[in-house]
Image (cartoon, rainbow, N blue to C red; front, side, top):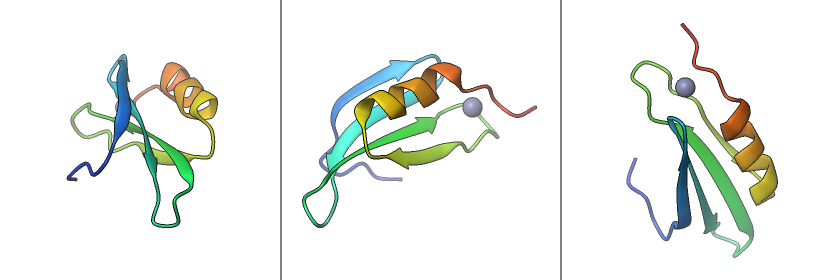
Length: 61
Ligand SMILES: [Zn+2]
């Protein structure tokens, strides 16, 4: 995945959280786990939701 226009990137455990504007200019937020074989990645409408998901994420075994 090649980041584009990501801003405010932060790392919570193995999960990266970043904010970006989608093609319609809306504020969107993404959380993506960097652990091998996890593959968790999701988008949220609020930064708080993305950070909460990152904090509560546990990798699948
Ligand atoms: Zn994970």
